[in-house]
Amino acid sequence: MQTEQLKAFVIEKLEDMKGRDIIALNISDKASFADYMIICSGNSNRHVKSIAQSVAMECRAAGIEPRGMEGNDVGEWALVDLIDIIVHVMTDEQRDKYNLEQLWAE
Image 1 (cartoon, rainbow, N blue to C red):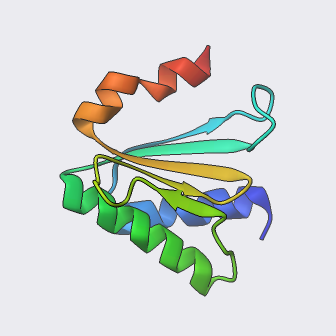
Image 2 (cartoon, helix red, strand yellow):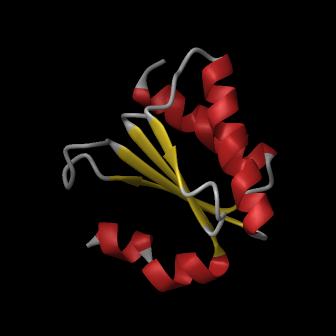
Image 3 (cartoon, rainbow, N blue to C red):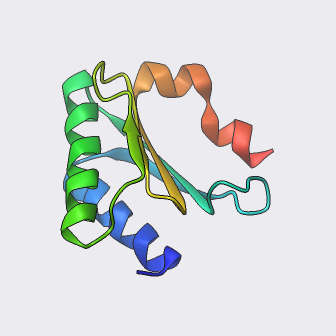
């Protein structure tokens, strides 16, 4: 799956799990580790964990093995590393605190 197709696939899966405020940032000119960063919010710690687990599971089912997954034990902020795409699923509090959209948009 090409990067643009993977991006659309991941966004669709985030929407299926009711992820909110989904943003895809092209970071290819700012970072060497990925082309896109996708950020979304979950309603609670449990919702954040469920969204991240679902994205990883759906990717595996499509033949894309995530490189790693972090933060799914606590659920305030989960990261799924899909090599070309990094997915951040966060509670509103964590998203406001770290403001990744502004950090990577600059």
